[in-house]
Amino acid sequence: MQAIPPSENELLKRLAEGDATAYRELFVRHWDAVYSSALLLSRSPDIAEDIAQEVFVTLWEKRAQLVQVEKLESYFFVMARNQLYSRLRKLSSQDAYRRYLLDYHQEVAHSGAEARAEFKELEGAIHSAIRRLPPQQQKAFRMSRFEGKGHEEIAQAMGVSRITIKSYIVQALASLRKFLAHYPGVPLLLYWALQPVVGG
Image 1 (cartoon, rainbow, N blue to C red):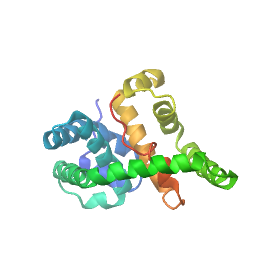
Image 2: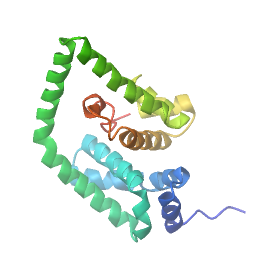
Image 3: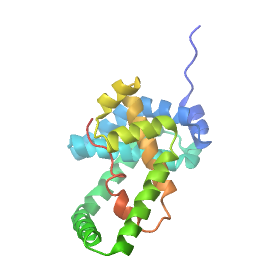
């Protein structure tokens, strides 16, 4: 006898309690719809991919509030729309931030031992946070960020589906943000690590 799939209300309750399996089930059920909504709003596949991943990062980060959600599809659409508006507002500041990062790294490269030591300490904090991730998330994240592999390639290497790899990486991003939220200077080093994964 085939098991009856859990209802969305049940999954949301489990997710609110931190159940990663429930999160992945919701991810698989709704990724395509969220991506499609983001594509409709943005008319850009790359931006839609970014927005969809940000929606699911937010879903995990705010999971405790989800028991109050009645219509998940509407909730996702509003989140995607808000992410797009936020992205549009930040476009001009992103260029300024990239220039700031470039200047910062050039300054560190030409500065003294103290500044380089501080940079190494921050870099160590990132790697330490990555080691705190669950094994599968850590492996997928490292293959994506450090080896430059795409989602399909990682999925084949790990023997899981592409959508599962997306889920692992989105959860890893959310966890890293939490682990490193109060570490001074981390945004400078996390710029590459915490941007949504495009393509793959």
